[in-house]
Image (cartoon, rainbow, N blue to C red; front, side, top):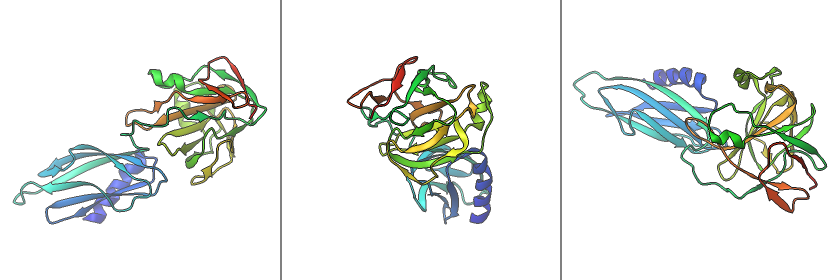
Length: 269
């Protein structure tokens, strides 16, 4: 029974989830225990939606569970048979997301480095409004020539890399063909660097990165009609990303502030 349920779950999860998380059921005398293995280097949010017949879920029919980084055999739920005199069955859908969707606190005063090498000078474009909501105003777009070296704004761990796309356009569905790097920070936030050059990513999944380290090359892949870097600093959420307002080190690094649309910024540190 355990093997049958596990195979069904993998088929569903592979459609909806990016994180490498396996959820599986083990039979018990009273029903089922539900476990998860997370091979990722960051926490993962698992959404477990259940349809139950003669079973009761300890965490409800629509549970949100946080699975720690590198967790193995981590129990996320229990299903109990209501009446053993009657047949029971269930179906389920699992969706997962990088990060802890319950996390609200983070280092809001951290001073990020500008995402290019010392001596570089680039203009901040209007944010790309791929989602409605005020948070998207805090996404950052730097206009850059093709092949400009992108550097890490903060140290962290590379969680995901996509580098095989080359299409660029303004339509929203072009978000699905972007090249990007996803980096996890110690305070639970993420940085996504996108609109990167096909096969122009300089790090691999699982690599630690340091602030200022080259990570990729700018391009037009994804939702873009000109070469640029699209940068989002965010916290995970079940419905959508919470894009964060961030401070950046300016000039020679002795000052900091919020970046302003239309301004040109030079990095001298």
